[in-house]
Length: 449
Image 1 (spheres, rainbow, N blue to C red):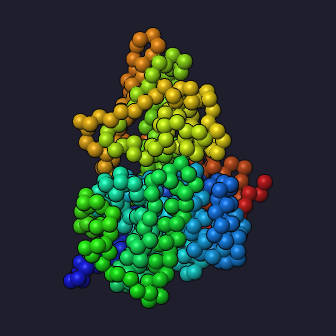
Image 2 (image 1 turned 90 degrees about the vertical axis):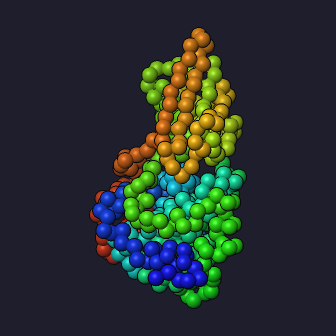
């Protein structure tokens, strides 16, 4: 029965607390894959210079019980959630979900890892909490509509606290009433603007969201008060964030049927840059294999549906961090080098040999196409290349490229670090409390070299 004064929030909280994702073997298998993929991003991300800056700033060098991924240090769980979330997103190599229009795993997994410092629970419960947290985040994304993202909010940061709180409430067995308060406390911490794309603040959004979700669940469990009707209140979540395009009831429609981790599913990134640039990356690599000479190109035009390049906020990058959000640079690097590597997107200045081609690219929108939305079938890019001999090439990519198995990605990301080699087989088989503790121990190491 729903609560008469807050039927949507009550139903959403009830769906979170009563969910049984373990009954779906496909969802569990995908969850294990996604965790391996996240760790393939977070372990190298932990070594990024800016991750160290953040760790110092939030006091994560102090003693505590929560692990820091890729480090022998331990710290306070709230600080660990921030740093591990940041490490998972700093390379922009982590997964994305179309319903979220953002990155769920790099928020939810760090929150659950931090929770493991405070409570004993099984690896199976860890997996269940992750799937439920992602479900909550994705269903909310569907309920907000397109204007939330397009008006400037970063959905990883705004939906992430709620997804993380949902995951924790599911694992801890919180009551429906406690969960509703936790979700509201998470929602009141929802913040993060797309203007930070290309800056260190973007991956901070992921860490900030993980911490906020953990704190919200902690506060609710302690009896801290908060509005229990964030989905129903006339000045609630949708009033503030949907800009009139929301449909709040979508948050509970078909919850877990199917699980959002299964359909439409996660996209595991094949390239370490903004997801919206991946179609042109794949086209560039294909044309490299076909032998297209970059010197023969007069001009390049990318055609997107309206809104599809909203995240691609950079046209003329000065360094590799900015270049993650530039399809012009991504295509040039893919065509010239035939691959996209982490060193294409580090802090060093962009290379002139790549920018010379990138400067010949422009964008346009097909105003007759459906506007880009949470529906992945609305995503496409058309590539038109004018050659200096007067001929033209046209290519089209629908949807997003991605990985089905992150094993090679993990191996590449941890090359030369055998201390992490046992992580993928453990994640693929873990069930017990002992298994989860073993995973924490393996992550709480630095390279032996």
